[in-house]
Image 1: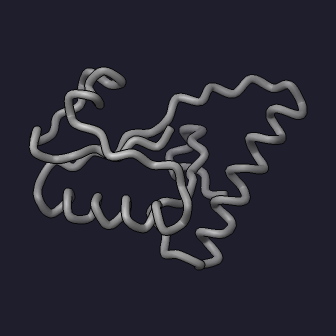
Image 2: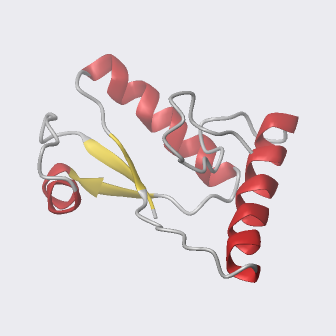
Length: 104
C-alpha cells in the first residue's frame, strides 16, 4: 500500500503504476486489506473517492495513460466530465474538453 507523501490519509489504489509490478500488486493488496481491517475492527473510514485533474494538454496525456494503466490493473476508475467533477469538488479548474479520472 502506498500512503500519500503528504500524510493526508489517502489509500492509493495503484492506478498510476505499471501492470504486474510489485508496487502495483502491493498497492492493490494493501488497499483491500486496509479497508477490510477498518471494517473488521469497526473503525471509521470515510470513503470520499479521488479526482485526478489535468490543467494542460501535457498533463492530460499523462492522465489518459494513468487511466489506461488503472483499467489494465483492474482498478475501478471512471472518466467523468469537468462538470461532473465540479459537483464533487466545486473548486476544480480544468479545460472543459478534458476528462477527469474519478476513483470511487
